[in-house]
Amino acid sequence: MTDRVKVAVLGGGSFGTVIANLIGSKGEQVNLWMRNAERAEEINRTHENNRYLPGRQLSQNLIATADLQQALADAEIIFVSIPSQSFRDVICQAKPFLRSDQIVVSTTKGIEANSFSLMSQILAQELPDNPIGVISGPNLAKEIAQQQLTATVIASEDERVRTAVQEILHCAFFRVYASTDMYGVELGGTLKNIYAIASGLSAALGMGENTKSMLMTRSLAEMSRFAVQLGANPMTFLGLAGVGDLIVTCSSPLSRNYRVGYALGEGKSLDDAVEALGEVAEGVNTLRYVKEKADELEIYMPLVSGLYEVVFNHAPVSQVAKMMMLNTQSSDVEFVLPRADS
Image 1 (tube, rainbow, N blue to C red):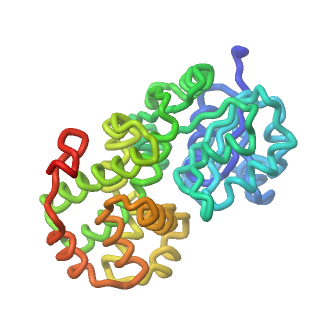
Image 2 (image 1 turned 45 degrees about the horizontal axis):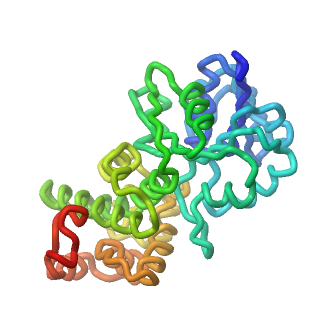
């Protein structure tokens, strides 16, 4: 790579803007692609994304554009920060303008409807010749924008991808760790959104610290059980992309999924909760897809099943909580004492 690296970020939401700004602040040239040409022009004029990061001054090295070909031209690394339901469509639009030597990295935490594909799987299907990776971790966009100390994980089977992303993103307040377990890292970032809804809901209902601790720990057990069944490494869930991301998403009102859960706990309908948020809460769709997959594979996920009943079938929270407490007691850590032996 040259001393000065050209980077493209696809997606002008909060995380895409934050990543682009972080790179621009390091003196690198970065193109931020968004669909809306008027908003792109406004960002270039005011150096502010007033929809997602109001009041936050953006780097002069960040150039917003609605021209996909222009955004991708000469970029050595491309970060894709597109909501999961639009992810494949944008990648297909970008494909004619991509070279096989360009690194493509997903920052999206979600699952594609119908196919149950993670974003890395979409990249592998649509861009089989490109080196790919995923970023995931306890990364609340607003805190990164404030330059709060933050760490993330770049997962890729390609050492060149891991090294390039570590170099381009590392700075005084943002540290990047590496992993080869792309599937596990991505599943961790995706699944925790479900449990953030449950955590927000329990907070709105005034549940105590013991309850929060139990909820978070059992969430970790449940998401790792599911991921291992799908081929992930259980040790990945002890790291930033597993327990780290789970803690921040289940503890912070800055988390969109937590806020949806909190609104549900206050008695709002799902539609009202999502509308009040004004942004995509990936956990709502993820809950539906994971429930279907868990049923199909017969994976024991009582928290997912209970939350599904509350969110989609309007079941009373107290009734679901009672049902979960009456479930058969089993082992604490299944990789130490398997369920069959408990």
